[in-house]
Amino acid sequence: MNSMNHENNSNTVTSRLPTGLARVAEFAGETPARAGGMPALLFLVAVAALLLAGCQHEQPWATGTDHHPTGAQTIGKLESHDPRFFQLVPATARIEKLAQGFAWSEGPIWIKETGFLLFSDVISNTVFKWKADEGITEFLKPSGYTGNVPRGGEPGSNGLTVDSQGRLTLCEHGDRRVARLEKDAHKTTLADKFQGKRLNSPNDLVYKSNGDLYFTDPPYGLEAREKDPKKELSFQGVYRLKPDGELTVLTDQLTFPNGLAFSPDEKILYVAVSDPDKAVWMAYDVKADGTIANGRVFFDATAWVKTKPGLPDGMKVDKDGNLFATGPGGVLVLAPDGTHLGTINTGEKTANCNWGDDGSMLYITANHFLCRIQTKTKGARF
Image (cartoon, rainbow, N blue to C red; front, side):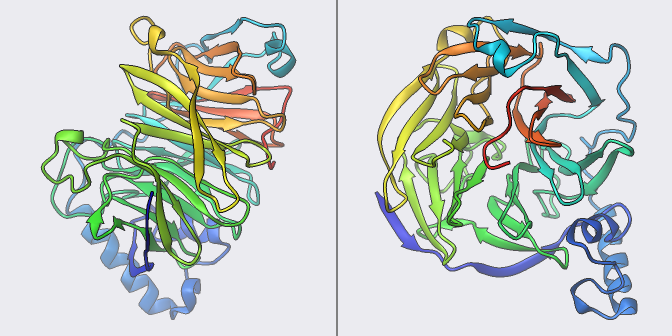
């Protein structure tokens, strides 16, 4: 177990938005003219400069602007393996296709206060917004890579969440950090180094109720992944970041740690391992000091990797402790005892999911699609 006092980096960066600062201002409850207290004229000049700077290095992999779903309005099917599955997901429920045309959709988070969904397109370096009466709009670009040198791979934001104050917190692949979007639309770096070495590429994150932030750090945002010469750490870690800036590596023994979630009572931390040779979900006991112990395999899907699309990835937990875990075949529904109850089979490589609306709607990011399905349960803490 290694730990260090990691002081928050005060460097901030403003990301380019499609209409100046309108999208983030809407999220933060500010108007562009007064966000951050900057005089309106100076503020608009600053935004214009950022827009021009952003246009100078448009990413060649950027997706198009038409994300209206075409063809069939539903995808996939439900697969029940236990009677409890249809107690959680109605047998008549359908996987509704809300939008399409993304390079790799990820990290959905429902914004309760304003009733919309945010999610990442990792490859196009964009956070998109979906709202029922508006459809898809660009919310934040660049979302995870602000460098001037064009690059390939997966540069954008991945996992998204909000803190207790409603501020968007992002795992940023390209900039290799966890960052927070402030009310004035600047970003604050929360973690970018461990013991003086740059993180790999933070992937997914979850806040504990006491304000501690847990996140994973696989190499997927590095262009050559674990073989990338820019990689500085010798391991892929699971971390805990305290509000005072202390960063602790909880385990460095997982090959490709990915999604993570707490049980409703926060006594168990689940971590997905997206390793095709050991495609498992791990469970750890959470100790009183917030560290973890007694790691064990909660569910093993390695045998499915060769026949079903996807790997263990993002996951969420419902109010009763059932896991809705994306992996081979779609969204696996796993009981607290590890029983596989059934699968919401999207037919696609499925990256992540999250609760929205009143807490019973499950939003799903599946490859090029944004989808949702009505459930009979509700998300934990919703």
